[in-house]
Length: 232
Image (tube, rainbow, N blue to C red; front, side):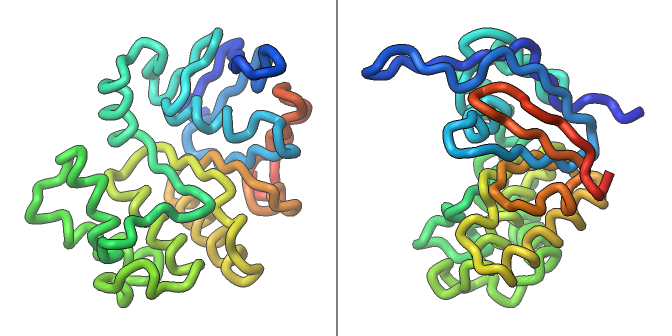
């Protein structure tokens, strides 16, 4: 059996709001095995993005433990978390978040520049290879604004893969795309997963279960169902 890459142990996340304490996640226990492609689904406010932020070390749990790649994220300082995140997690967002003044290839190089995990002389070559993998190498020296939405999301995926992280975290990565590009991006994620990449994706896509190996549904901060998908 594949080992667990992600482990959540009795995780709670509460926020102080004007109306009082709001519990976004309530006693969550969840394992994600290495090589799984997991869709996290649920209505707005169910805790999906909070869960993803905890896995990325962007936020910390109020109670419980979050372990990723055998690292207890709660034991790390903020600077240690930033360094860990750069090496172990690739992030893909709904609105791409490419820097507009940098070319596409420079955007993909950025994570390598931050972590310095790849020699400087090799970074552009690696970035071009990743852009080729996602099918937009011919757009490398253009600014993001010159690309379509689907192409920008492909560039964002290439950037997330820059440091070869074991875990890819995606927050509504197809939510800003038309149907043709949604299908193409999902196909790309399926190909990355087939290569062994572990993917956890927050999505509103109704047919996510047919595209992923597992679907976890959140309702009011609780796991209401956890079922195998068609790709399992």
